[in-house]
Length: 169
Image 1 (tube, rainbow, N blue to C red):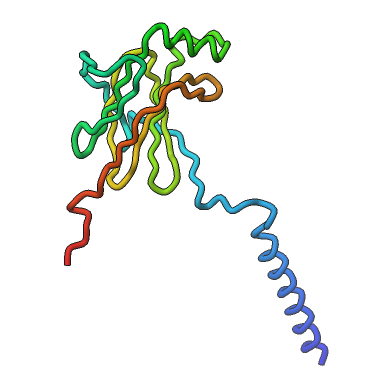
Image 2 (image 1 turned 180 degrees about the horizontal axis):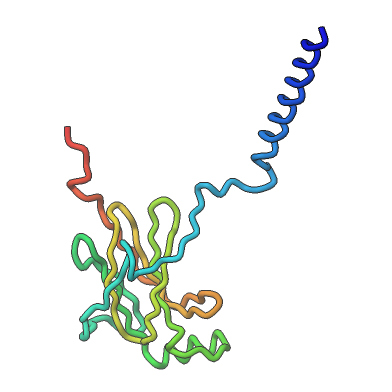
């Protein structure tokens, strides 16, 4: 009878230890961040890189940011901010920013809003970037130092799904 009691007590202790380890693995105090992705882009490495556009003759109005389709795979953001508008925005913010702080934030909205920043450092210019199918894009020209301060928003461009990605019957 003694060996049977030892086996029962040892089994109960092992079961309690296993229960304690398994119950402390998942703590309910911490939120489930498995679906949230915090990322920082490295345009020189990947899919969402950007290239400097050779659109030296920008045909957009003053104080405008425009997003348009360059081809099926790329969008182009063009902006033209007048010196007067720049000074007006700087006086509203009341911080001594320079054109070096100008940043173009590219936002994509498909399943939530994701964005990446492109330092532009100029009041006039354009940038090309690659886009994903079945996604809406818009850009925001703003000032980035420790936080992003939006100045001018662009129009929204919706990239349709590609024909070859559809399932054919």
